[in-house]
Image (cartoon, rainbow, N blue to C red; front, side, top):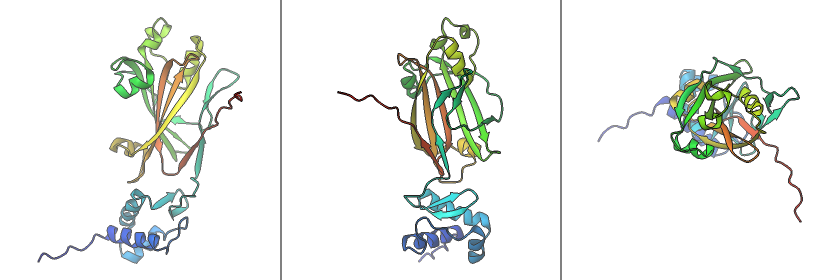
Length: 253
């Protein structure tokens, strides 16, 4: 009979903690032993401990809070960061994010020409394959602790007959000011979903294994509901919640 291979150390750690979580040894919302304690207990290095923890994070059993440690996931735990969503216009005409975060660009975005894929064409209500100006940039805040990938799309058809027919418009948020100068009154709709990252996204956002993305599509529209532009914001989804102020509707009679 073939001999059973010994279980890898990181799997032993994952199984040990999983059993403790499921039998109540480690209650929901309570901290787990530190990486240092687990490394000594199992006679391994801290990267091996992290590999075991990654399995539990992927299974939704554990969350890691920046600067606080590892905790058993609780359905009632609040994330450490809440970001109000929305765009507001300042008295000087500038458009700013409602969360007030001061994002810094890792490098200046450069306009490239792309063709609209089917999913984005649907959001922008343009034919698939229509050319668009596209800007890509990695943004950071809070000395690099917060990171997001930010992409802006502007269909060529929106710019016909304007000064931007021959030159690229600026990327968001200055794009909003440019659209307002063209006579548009702007409104915004956002679509939010979660998914697992692609390898290059995980690398850019420094995501541990098992951490999903929040992907936000923000459509900029005129007052008649015509889409003018699209922003795609991709950010870590493990310790973050988004808050939205819902518009007050008049009473119906």
